[in-house]
Length: 244
Ligand SMILES: C[S@@+](CC[C@H](N)C(=O)[O-])C[C@H]1O[C@@H](n2cnc3c(N)ncnc32)[C@H](O)[C@@H]1O
Image (cartoon, rainbow, N blue to C red):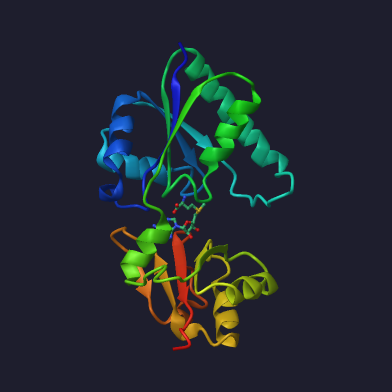
């Protein structure tokens, strides 16, 4: 009897934003397979999970996933693929031994999470295993809440955009939406400020840094963020003015 692989969203940072279901699964699984990419090998997902569920005594398998972009329609960097394969192999060993494995992931697994890539890679191995995906509070919703900026009202259209897109692509997407959420803004904030200035949208943007964490910061004047080292955990909401 094979174990179940759980990919569990643990929310944006505050352990109180984890769902009861996520906490229950973390509680019952002895093996936590935790992704790490930054903070000197530390895992934010582990930190959040441990804030809600006792992690002492758990079998914590930490795995580094390189922070390299993956582009739709293009083959991922070999180092990235290798990390997925390596992770899948280790997880499969546990599952085949009848052990359940939980993969806690930041925010919601459906939004830019490695969890789905790991699931796909496990499936490529051809073994049958059970998988369960547990949704979590995404930084998208948490950023909206922290800034009191609604994402969709009435018949408004929302887009989620990686801020690393080139300007022309961002402009095109902005033409076709009412509200935009920009993720991964941390390295490109200066360029984003210039672009939004050009589009006369500076007043319509709010930047939320380390949302739901103790040192959360809401930047209502995003010009102030230029030239600063904003954290990787930063999301921007842009609500275009209504013509009315
Ligand atoms: C790889 S994506 C992961 C998104 C995550 N799965 C989610 O649903 O929120 C990382 C991006 O999420 C956003 N993010 C994650 N946690 C955040 C937080 N606490 N505050 C603000 N933005 C956050 C940032 O834009 C960051 O660059």
